[in-house]
Image (cartoon, rainbow, N blue to C red; front, side, top):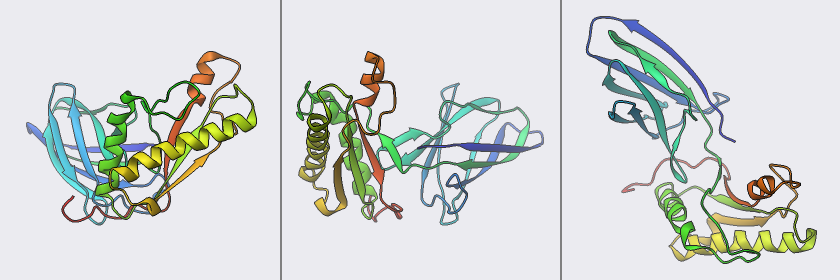
Length: 225
């Protein structure tokens, strides 16, 4: 799942803006996150966008005296890669270096929902699925696995079949939108991989989910994306 490690070293000087150098790698720091769009959103309403180069490095000038979150580009669209953390740039900081480490290879498709006991996608699911279509088009070398998960109501065999049907429904939607079928594998896990306690209604709700997992590295964005 997504993980984060951030470090900040700021060099003080008298200025009204800060030149930030951002180095982005995976959490294990084994490979650079190349050609990733990063948007810094400030509490004061400012926003600054930059893109990492082939070494996972980006440079951007931001406003002094604001607090920012980082939004990164992934296979399912933008996500908060500070994961709830806020990063302050103090006044009179002339330059700074950020190190950002995250993995974007496994996401829950929050908002993808089905009719009760069925594999029929609800209309509210289409917004997040469309962002996934855009991500798959942008990273045209990426292959993914669609994972279906359920609670334990109805027994093992029932939920194995239901989770597979739901994963297939998501795959079929992506294929109908023009994503090559060979890029997508659909697997139903039933309730074998619970994320919460199936003894509570809240836990059951958390266990009913669709996840998407990258198989290998997504590669660079396609030309013209």
